[in-house]
Image 1 (tube, rainbow, N blue to C red):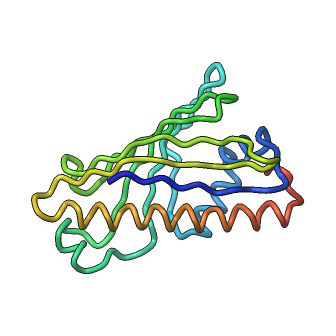
Image 2: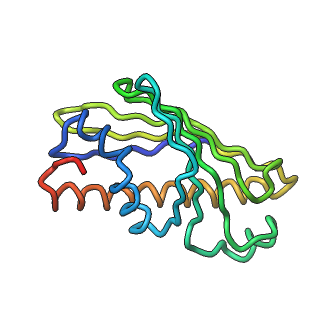
Length: 168
């Protein structure tokens, strides 16, 4: 199931948003605010290219019918991002801890300037290969991802307002 989300941020330049997006202090606060447990597994920066892996555990229960299908009450995953500073575009993929041979998700994210504001977009594709039930699980995952990005955007706007648009 494909998805795309976009959020607009005022009072920050594209370069400052790029720095903020990958800032560890900001990301730790963001994850706490949107109820994601986050563990930095890998962060390598070489020649302007960032390779990062995060272990993510959403602090919320999965609805009963979905939990029954996947055999777990929580979804955990490792997010892998590859980004070249200045390109304003990254690729991402996740490795699920639950049914790793049946759940695939990957995509791209980026930032751009539009009308003096910064737009962050994320797009991806979630595939769950469970006969007859994959679509239900895909819809749950995509809805949760979209809600998480909406919550992250709200947090980012508050962070920028409190700090006068300055990076972390």
